[in-house]
Amino acid sequence: MTPHLRHGLVAKDLAGQTSGFESLQWAGVVETYADRCADTRKGDLGSASNLLTSQAMTLDTVFTEMLRRAVANCGDYPEAADRYMRMAMKAQAQSRATLEALAKLHQPREQTVKHVHIDNRGGQAVVTDTVQAGGTKTENADQSYGPAYSGAFGPSLLGEDEAWHGMPMPSAEGQEAVPLARR
Image 1 (cartoon, helix red, strand yellow):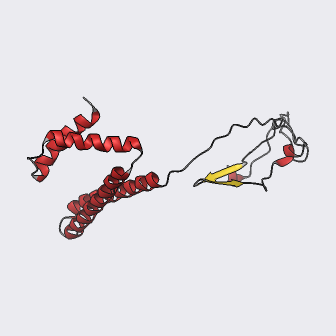
Image 2: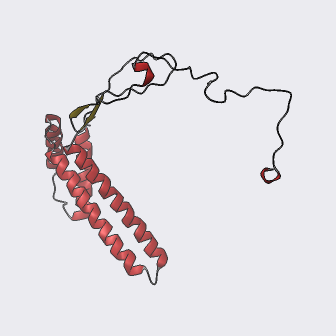
Image 3: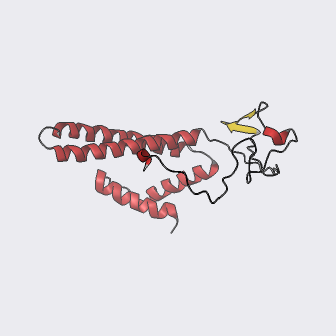
């Protein structure tokens, strides 16, 4: 039971029930599914593009009809108007998601991940030497590499910073009184 056989049979039954195409032959539907699968394996995304475009247009039509029904029911039937509006918003969101998938299909992005070992002896390091967007490579020549880049090491993260107040130390003096407004 190959996927195109199973899905082709279901599509044939649904098409027959919903649109009156009872005369469709299941073998022809399955063959069409198999052809589209073969096209996709070869890298021809034309049928996928057609499918996504058709879906987006259908969902937009559903949005428009549900919005029309919501407006028609606003005055007398607010609950029905609310339900129609919710269905309209769902159809609109699905249409947008379908169009985003179509855009990704035609404009694939490439991401390159590079592992770099940084040893900066306890300081913080952010390293970005390339940015790739849409297939173009940009060098970040003006990247600030901080004190570790010049060979100087800053203070470790744990401990006391002499330039600031340092870490609080417990003492027998107790806590200072809090003003009444803060109690």
